[in-house]
Image (cartoon, rainbow, N blue to C red; front, side, top):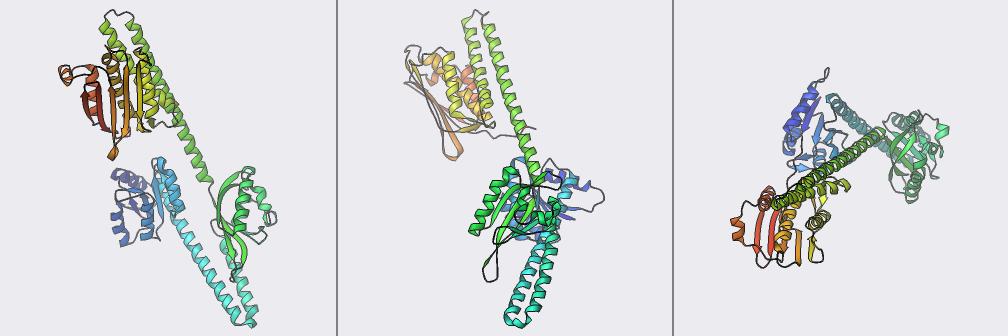
Length: 499
């Protein structure tokens, strides 16, 4: 088997090639292309039996990659490689014409080889079925023309039609799908042998509306409604439902029905085919269960991290009780505030529906309220004004922004209103052009001069702000007098998957 592996990751391509070559007793040749343009060059040379491809390439991505490959070599079967996060796209790719898909890191060489063999067989069978249907259509057209030309040859034409009908039944009985037909009264008049093998029932039991006895009770009303509404409108339909199998278990089917018309355009009923989706549905259920378990684990982790941070804060609080030096006590209190700001992030994630990102408006509002209460500020005297757009950040970016806000807000509460006990502190977060963001913390207090900042560069708070801004690859600007305004321009951090 000559396989063209279209994968931009040379590492993954090498691993897959090694897994395929480890299969004993089969002859496999694997050629690799790391982009679509290179794949075109190899496909134009011919000799490729099967294509194993990733949809995301440097020069093309998504279903457009599949469409281009199919347009280039429509006769070659395609198996899509995907990751669990993109499995829905792979399923859609199969619906668009790919023969199968595999999930990376979940298949060994033997499973991949079976998928490739299945793709070749499925491509062959569908091509053969299409050719036979075309042949049948041509035969019927010829028979119809013969009937029009010579009424005297009616018996001969009828014999040809009967033979052709038998050929159709033979073809349908050997097709890899369940096939059915219905008449003008919506009742089914024909099922192929594959259908009877699947349900374990007889022709007499299934004809008419008897087949509906095997439909799962939860799917029955929806199934009947879809069929009857499409029938009345003479429109194609597609639906999924569960049908009882010969062993008494229910299997999932994808049923696709289209209206039938006589040569004169008169409506004659419907014909449909069903594909068994049971294995695919079972896989989807297992994947959903795995995702749910992972989310539960992540929530528990965030909850435990939050509890551990709160324990650390409580231990610091106990230690403060034995310290007499006010400056040391103040340092401990600042550490507690920083720890709590991080704990708030994990608490927000624990309660969130999305564990991959943080809604900044809720997070910053909760954080600002906590910092204000920790300094015993009267909310009527010093008003906190938050102007935060509806933005979501990844965890690292959100935590970094939260620590910056905590440091700057703490600085304002400690120093800006030493004389005047009333004022307003504003926190703003806005999206800018080209994926940039602007964070601004300002107060109307006594202000802070740039000379004072330069004379005290070792201040832990200011040093932390500079380090955090540097982590965001941003720039910080100080405006002072009257009041103080810190403006920080930055971009979101690029998340790198942990191994």
